[in-house]
Amino acid sequence: MSFKEANEEFDEVFINAVRQANQRGTAVVIGIREFGKDKKFQTRNALEQAGSHLGVLCVGKKLFESVSTSTLTLIKNNELDESHEFHSALALKAFEVFQGKKVKDIDPENQTIIFNNHEIKPLPFSELQTVTTNQSHCYATGEGDHVAEILLNLSPREILDNPKRRYDYHKIIQANPNELKQFKDKIVIVGITGEVKRTESFKVYLGLEERHGFEFHADTLNNLLLPDNIIRKLAYNYQLIIIILIALLGFAIRFWLPQTQKHWWLGLIFVALLIFGLNLFCYSAYYVLLNPTYYIGTFVIVYWITGKIELRWFPETNQS
Image (cartoon, rainbow, N blue to C red; front, side):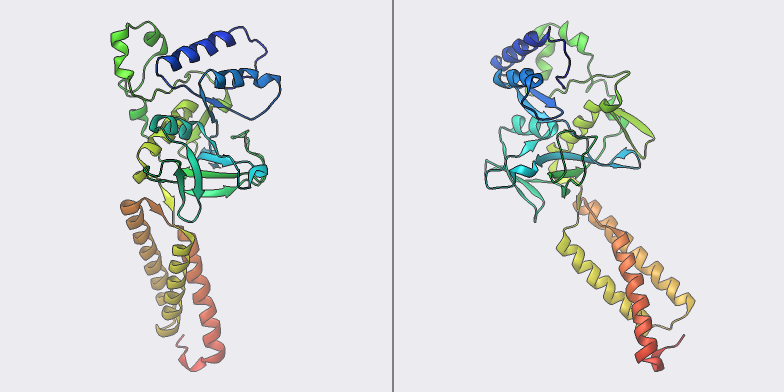
């Protein structure tokens, strides 16, 4: 939610509703677009005092106008010291409240988020990035901030539209108490459908489908509740090992096999299939993604350099 409207007529009603929900044992998590200390943030501060929890509204990076990641937490540039504070995004804040824990630290080497309860297993994330420019999809971030993100594993459209998961708000407020028992100990995301502002919707599948903002946060939350299925990028040290092995393979193919056009294409196809199979295995077994561009590029460059070296210093081995 964003509290920018000049009309504050219903602010007190909303704050009282949050306070009453909190007294009944229902935790309320509210999304905010940006940080601030001026008067327009008084409502936000009042909600926090009423017992609500605040999460940052961030969508994530876009690829070809399509959302590909979801921001989990951010560290402001001026808070990079021993007392830095982690600002959780809406989905992660809801996850924290639901699990009764709070983000304590980030482990970049193991790509995990650590919580204050040591009995809780660390939560994996896909990548830790430094923001280089102001992000239109995440107003709270600025240049030099650090964000931990996950590669978004989207739910099929039919699951999001399942009537057992989706409820009309007007029917809920008119329902009797017995009908509301199904929501006990559940996470309920409240959002709007129909015609919405561009900032409250996003595109997926290379722009072929448009979804509402609350559906994005629901998918992010589903990813967090199933941490073993979070898609991660291969750690840099393992990437380096694979690059070295591919480089050695490129050297061997160029140096010891007959250097004809046919063998060049056979070698390239073999390496491409090998990388594809390795990527498929890592994703299906561990939800880890490799970057084929690095490895195929390494093979081509090493193959070419080896050929140059062979022609200059070992011409007698050249069979082309």
